[in-house]
Structures are given as structure tokens and as C-alpha cells.
Amino acid sequence: MRTTALAAATGVTGLMAGLFFAYSCSVMPGLAAVDDRTFVGTMQSINRRILNGWFLAAFLGAVLLIALAVALHLTAGGPVLAWTVAALVLYGATVLITMRCNVPLNDRLDAAGPVDRIADLAAVRESFEATWVRWNLARTVTNVAAFACLVAALVSRRAG
Image (tube, rainbow, N blue to C red; front, side, top):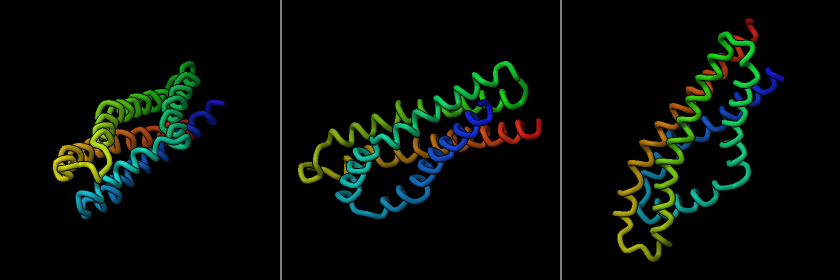
């Protein structure tokens, strides 16, 4: 059960790291090259559609599975526990960044209304893009680090 929980936590955390990394290296740089109307409309659409069962299961499932892996390794101690606790802290930071930084920015962008009714698309974009990109990079780093810790935990478990 310990190995299964740890492997599942690693897999789901890796999926989330990949998602945030894809935004950092392709989605946002690609959108940086488009006009304000396309940028705002596309981000509004993405932000609405990402709120689906698959995303929520992976995003919230990762923290639950990491916590389960920590709990299952409490009595074992050692490097596996240390790596999983580190992963839990780092993924917790990912969740915190998402909820306190990216989600409020997404909500503000959505509250601006349909692109056809926004008087100053450039201002809406300016108040969103650079800050959102910066916080996405931060959560990418924390998420990739959590994933690396879980991989290290699996390697430690196998070596132990």
C-alpha cells in the first residue's frame, strides 16, 4: 500500500507539474505574441474550461495522495518520509500560490466581461499577464520540486 500511494502521488504530481510547465514554456509565450482581444478572450476561455473533473481530480488528488503517502510512511521514517514530507510542503506551496495568486487573477479577468464589451483590452491584459506568468512560474518550480522529491522518495524506497 505504501508503494502504491507513493507511486500514485508521484504520477499525479508529475501530471500537474507538466501542466504548469506547458503554460510556462508554450501557452503563455504563444499568447504573448497575439493581440489583446485574442489574449483576453483565450485566457477567459481556458480559465473557464480548466475547471473540470479531470483537472480538479489531479490538482486536489495530488495533495491528498502525497498526504496519504506521508501518513503511510510515518512509522517507517527515514529518507522516504523526509522526501514525501518535503513534497507535501512544496505541493502545498503550489496550491497556495494557485489559490492566492493565479485564481484571483483568473477571476478578475473573467469579471472584466466578454471581450466585445471591454473598453480597454490593453489595460485588462496588462493587469493580468505579467503577474499571472510570474506566479505560474513560481508554482511550476514548486510543483516540479515536489515531483522531484517524490521521485527521490521512490528511489529511496527501492534502495532501502
